[in-house]
Image 1 (tube, rainbow, N blue to C red):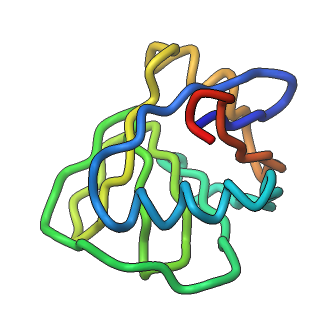
Image 2: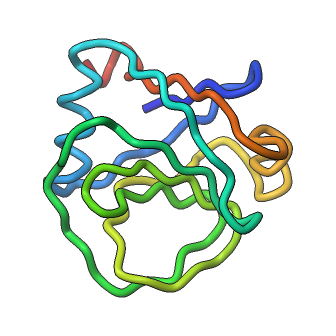
Image 3: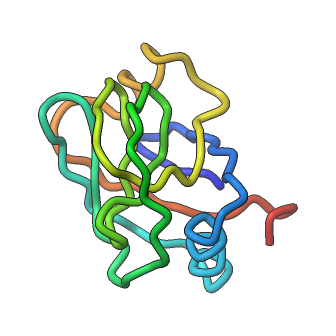
Length: 119
C-alpha cells in the first residue's frame, strides 16, 4: 500500500490478517483520501468511513507502525504507544526521522492506494 502525504510517498507492507485484507479490499475500489489529525505528537489518524474486522491485541507501537484502531481509524504512528490495537502494516521506505518529516506538524490529508502488483 502507499500513502501520499505532503508530496511524499510512504510505502507500507501490509500484514496477513483479516483487517489488512479488508483495507486492501477497500483500496481495490480506488484510492481513499483521509483527513488525518495529529494526536499527542505521536500519531496521525483518520476515519476510513466504515467498520472493518478487528484483530486487536495489546501492543506497543513504534515509529512506522500502521494500525487499525476502533475498527475504522487508520493510524500512522511515529512514536510509541501501548494499547489494544490491530496492526495492519509497517512503513518500509522511511526512517523514523524521515517519517516525521513527511507527516509534518498538525493535521494532514493522506491519499491511500495500492501499488499495481497489489491490485
